[in-house]
Length: 302
Image (tube, rainbow, N blue to C red; front, side, top):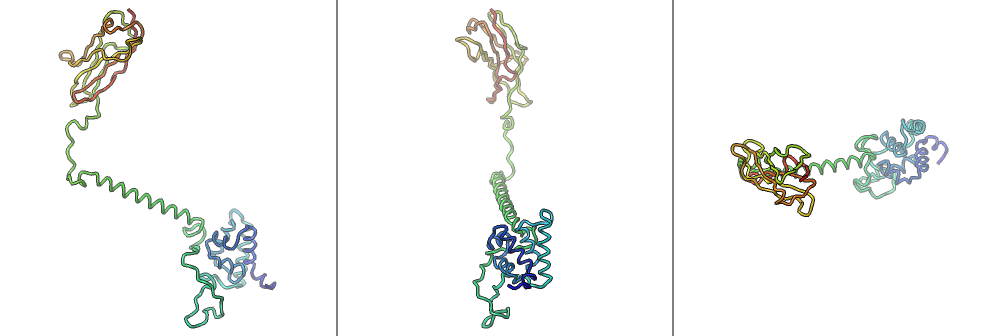
């Protein structure tokens, strides 16, 4: 290559220099820039001067930008403009150089005998579709592909979920309108209520042989099942300790919602010391509320 050709091809020299400084082969640079390998070869040999979008792809591949490396980018761009202005090399063709098929029965369309090379398989090398930052640029290509895959997966999940909801609906099952709710079904999770009467507070002291327990028990809401019975329970320390049912009361006092039980300390062998009292409320449908008003803690001092 003579000196005048080198002077008129500053961009070819700049591309070779940056590629070698980056430790890249022509194939690796082509992959990084998203262009065909022949484009890199012809650019470095000065056979053509690339168009603007290929220049930007090469600058990005070398890590050159007006913001990050203003001086290096300016020099790279100046070399590209100088070579284009001098008209050195033909402009980049829309297809890889030297891949034009000869006319049937005639010479190559370039007017000179070009070396015959195997054609590149379609889609083997994706060319840059626009300047850096557009959806077609190589640094963004994987991110866009991943976003499309995620969007497709979400769409499939939504379709499957809607299908399951439709299949489980009464109308989809052939039942027509939604069937009425059976009486009591909405109350199945409800619990009956209760509140202590005696003892009314913590720290009570039992000094006699018996002790009266009393509590209110009632349906929580109007229309809830009626109360079936109340179990009064106790727990104390000692060999006969542990939670036990003292008595099961099936009917309240006349005209009230009060359920009473008498603790016989001698019969139940309750020793002196701490004692815990509680009660559980059951309704006629089997719903139960254990210790609705909590456990009362006291002492036995006989």
